[in-house]
Length: 148
Image (cartoon, rainbow, N blue to C red):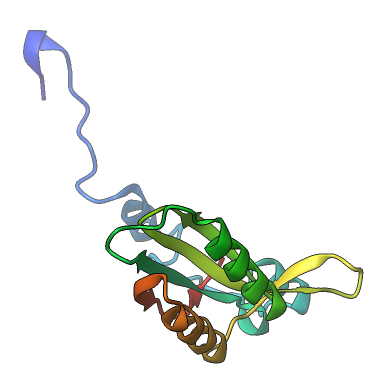
């Protein structure tokens, strides 16, 4: 088949290259391996699977309608509360609101900090503390989700 200017045009596969190779017998169906060995503990830890899955949750809040003129006292109180519970907060706080992500941290056997999975109790605790603050007009604590 010829294209414009008489140049021969190469026909493309109507299927994806993966599907074409599978039809030729080279690959397994998409998304399935023909044989998969079970992962050992080191591999599960590296890929954050099984018992090594780590969860965290998002926090969004808005301050009272006129906004905060000085957010430093609120930031200091939030950081003190979160760290006293073994959690960490990463995100932003400005004059009109806050949004961020909370996860649990602890020291491992080598003395290094590592993430640990957060729980629904952590979510509830942070949500109750934020609702009790007079600076906060509304709070939304997201569901637990996988960190990595």
